[in-house]
Length: 268
Image (tube, rainbow, N blue to C red):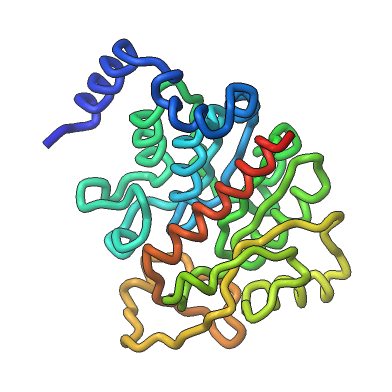
């Protein structure tokens, strides 16, 4: 079994043997040198690196983003393994952002990956310097914190993209992108809109969301142990509960968010 120190040694050796030009040869062939330079210069922050955010982060780094901050306060638990990129039986109990940072640096050792093991909320909002980024990606579950991130990010010049609920989905063909106020069939988007209306505070500008209008029911029984070990999603209309989710859905959500950043960053 290759430990943490051995992995760092392997990454160091690889860094000496190759260049980022080689890593992104196929990307540059498609996008061109100027677009790749744009990607390398952009600063991106991803809030939440669970089932959606972890895949988004990987998509960004594999595509040429070199300045990435990942934010999440949680540690890897067993129930994460079915859908979260860095969650394996070997990473249980470790902070998600630390494990993910290690993986991302094995993909591109030349990248600058900043891991922040913190909760984003009213007491910490000023600690992230959101206005310093070119792109802000929201993959937060909590309704309250998600609403705060939307309002905060939309007050800056950063381009903002958000994930709506990725749980209770099975059909990947129903995943799509729409402007926040035009998202239909998603309970999280509806709850956010209602919250903004009750607060009488609204995002300062429009932003795109990844969502699906599919909404299945949990067929399995509720796992009380899982509810105790995992923060609830906070936006369920009746009571908080843990909903089932699958990797092919959460990963597509994450890759679509990454794609939105890449499309915008490489346009003429």
